[in-house]
Amino acid sequence: MTARIRRLEGIINSMTPAERAQPEILKASRKRRIAAGAGVSVQEVNRLLAQFEQTQKMMKMVAKGGVQKMLRALRGGFRACADSPRARPWRRFATVQVSIV
Image (tube, rainbow, N blue to C red):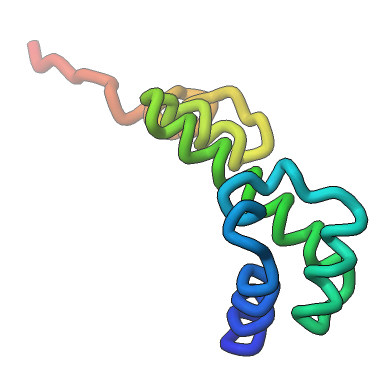
């Protein structure tokens, strides 16, 4: 795990401050320079950028109050929320009331 963190840190440190602030400006030639400076492949730079974009999208969802949407996205599009009968079928039977006459 520490080696991976060092590798990611090397990639980030190989970027200019402008590239860190605006990763969308990174084109192929800049990615090659960053990869060469960090001693990794361009694929690893692309992987880091994709992970960053995904994290950024999640944080925007959380900021908008879309935690349920984020959980659905993490579950792979599973539409039932955690409290629905489809997610927990045994809960339907736990609510049966017994009346003593």
